[in-house]
Length: 164
Image (tube, rainbow, N blue to C red; front, top):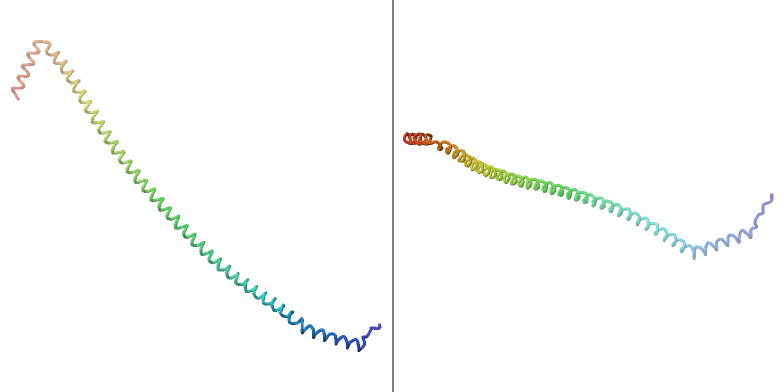
């Protein structure tokens, strides 16, 4: 196998061309390439710093949100407690008022019953008195219809009045 060996002239000119290319790249392209790499590196660092700041800010926001939620829960509990107290006070007040009204109604009913009872008793007495007078009148007429009985009744009445 015959490998082609480059000649000395080819190697010499290749090395010279390479050195010239290296010199030109270093003179004109190296700084812009390194500058672009540096800019890219700075951009990445800034992005990482921004991401870290955003993460910290997010943690702070989450902590604030949690605190706000806790405050809202505490406020809700306080409002519910106040509402329960107001409800219990309202119920107690309504029960007291209902009890007072019921007592007044019972007192009025008892007074009306007593008044009706007295009126009924007075009417009954009046009726009994009227019946008694009618009965007495009929008895006296029956007694006085006979002359002998009349005289005896008068004598008995006179005898009773003289003894007293």
